[in-house]
Length: 412
Image 1: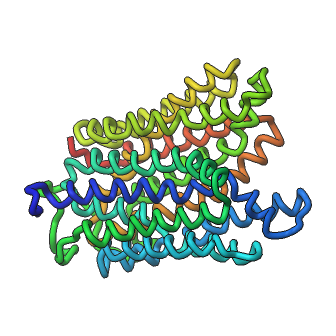
Image 2 (image 1 turned 90 degrees about the horizontal axis):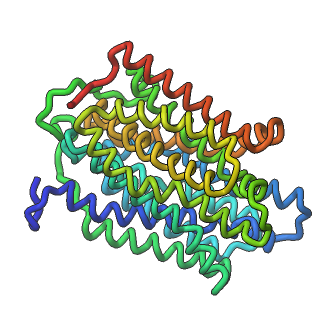
Image 3 (image 1 turned 60 degrees about the vertical axis):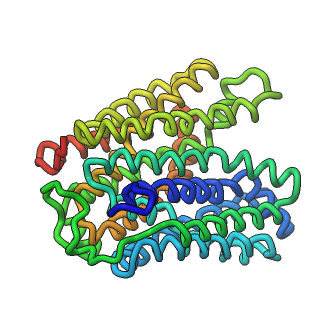
């Protein structure tokens, strides 16, 4: 469908949704540098209590997201994905804005749960673009959309820390809510969704095999490839979240100058995001030509080698280089997974598929820090990277199984 500008609707929506996803990434990550400090302001806690309560408040958002995402996904496939984008933006606007006025940690925990339960802008943006985009362009479009989330997540902590320093923790929540209100206005005004029966209307002229219209998790995973992709998403998130908490400690172990640890740790942490922003659209475009599963194979192989080598990093420059390569691997894997989900599901179930994928991602975010802490305590920081390499080997094995069973639908 052509818009008034002459561009296809999916291209115009991609432009607006990129900004919305970017702002969502900023909003979700902006509070991370000071969340524990904000918790400390809401009561008189000892070190053990502060750690416990901060962990609860951090994880409750992911728990709520994992539980509610399939509900919203099913509703999106029935009532429209644009409606769910509007709902997610206004839900995050309200919940983040109210966090500025809490008086105890339980109110904050409740609102964090609400931000997860009523969020989901990124998953719905992926679903809308996936449903509207011709499947020959799906990898490129989803890769571009991923750069919005990655760059927002990358800049969010820097912006949040700066705002909290200049203003206050509470005012930063107000600014975060305002950002989501801007996303709400842009989504209402510029995102379009054609009124159509999603079951009857194809998104592409290709004749690829797709799943029948199914509405439950059990139905969806009858297609083993869909289950494999869900597991892949969870494992990638486990890896990312298990490494993040110990990365600054690993930097301290390698860095001889204690006065520059925070700065150096920030640079090291930024490397994967920078690489992903650069590489994701290119891998997405390449995957559309040769097959997204081949790009995923490359990503798994690169990641497992890189994680293993990272466990033996002798100095900070080497660690930074390896983390940059890790971002390249992420840029290969994640758009490929989203593209494969798109190419192996019907338009009528796109939102539900991406919603369940978000649930697996949330479970990974929940499990990652716990697994990372257990492994680090048992084997040291290097062991976290080795365990990450093992998870990538499992992912690679699952994809090899899928290829052997002929589960991939090659569009090249």
